[in-house]
Image 1 (tube, rainbow, N blue to C red):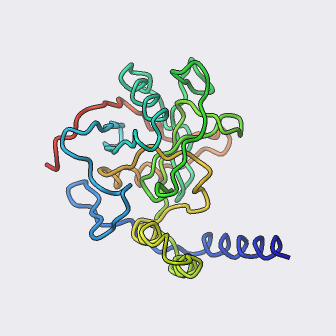
Image 2 (cartoon, rainbow, N blue to C red):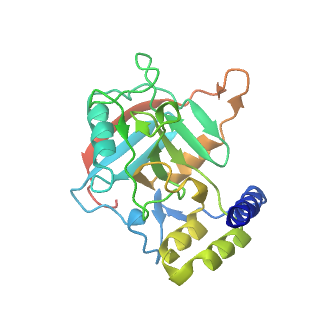
Length: 241
């Protein structure tokens, strides 16, 4: 009986999530996402001097705060490959409208690359979730093994009924900060606990959302317009300019 009830709840949530969305990805000022009173640690600005990633594409720039304490292997793999120039010149290979963009495959590494000699395991933290701008790792072959291939969540906003249901199901208010973040930025809650989150876009959400609008060619399963990652630089954060 409990299993049937759980399936029923999942079906309701899926129906609400796929219905009309609340267009709300937070305010953007000079390229930076303004989060106001949101307390989720994932959304806090990096400290001056903290290592960040700067993704320069042919459609604009995105800056990522990295989470080495939460996903150390994922961050080390990503930053090491970036410094080696692994990502320079590769394409955004997958775009799902109002969902995510994906990249990280190299012509010499069709399945992605791991600096550890083998693909590595999941690194989960329940406080790091799939809000818009979250950067996570895809799974190799459907397993819990990862390499260089990453995605960035680009969901435009959740319906308010869905947010209210999340709050009603949040016993003791333990997930309040996460739900507040989903309400302001949108995201894909159903992915939480299933994929590794290792970074967050704090600058260039507008670039992210523009890339997400690029049309896909259904025959080739690739964007009709090439979106190129020109460089990924790992640099110290110099503060808001």
